[in-house]
Image 1 (tube, rainbow, N blue to C red):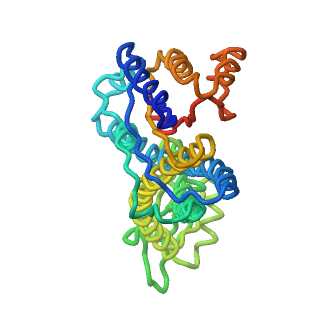
Image 2: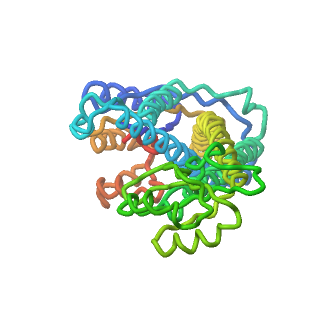
Length: 406
């Protein structure tokens, strides 16, 4: 299960005994797992500062989670497109049969799914072995400064992600626009890659080459009549360059002064003479090649950047959770700073029982809070995700379900 509970209770004798009782019950009844979560002593400041920072951290928590979701969604979209291409190529090359694909047998996992599965393991390991990063977030800094520092880091990730995503999208759209010109019927699509330099008569004072689209049902007629459409057609000069299910592309060589006559006669036979510019076609071919290389390079760089900066945002997010626990513990339990934090991972089917156990062992911290929970019902409390729940102990949920490998 990708759900964790970060809790904090006072460091007094009664609470410490209750915490040990919780640990024993968690193990004995297989309610979940627990892990020590060490939070260093930070600079407290005044009550007004604590209250202000508490509000700032609440907003920063939501904002950072939102940035992580955007980052992971962007990564998923990029890698999913790549995975689809790999699957298409495998099917086209006979690597995976359609039967195997439908039966879900012998089909390798996509890179996206494998990455997300590995990432969930890494995130879980980081949380369960959490150590405050003193090099990045010095404990000598005031709480307000730490909060602002984390906000700037996360905001920088969001800003740069938007910029990189826009640049990659521009390249992708430009390439797609050129690719679309090469799609459709032979009457309208670009002839790039079909008509080559060697198919044309170039730099001749008198001769030129026309490109003609002939309906497939009329190919025999074309071969029998094209020489008679003008007396200035070069005999046996027609060459078929491409044929699809609807039509064929042919070249024909003739004198330049006969072009208009040939076009008129071709039109009467339902043969379409296409305008073709070799320089423009060569430029389009070069531009497609350049954009294809640029897209591939940007894809690799962007995916690596997303992976690194998602991890950075996640590290910042867990430090925000630790800061929230510290601030709330001081506000609720008072000075001097004296609390202990624990990370719980409930078993999927034991969420309700673990919550009941928590409420039971820590009733002494706030009896009214437990009574209130019993009045509204545990199930309702668990479902109410949009609002932070109040318990007799300090509690912050941490979900890594945003990394969904399905």
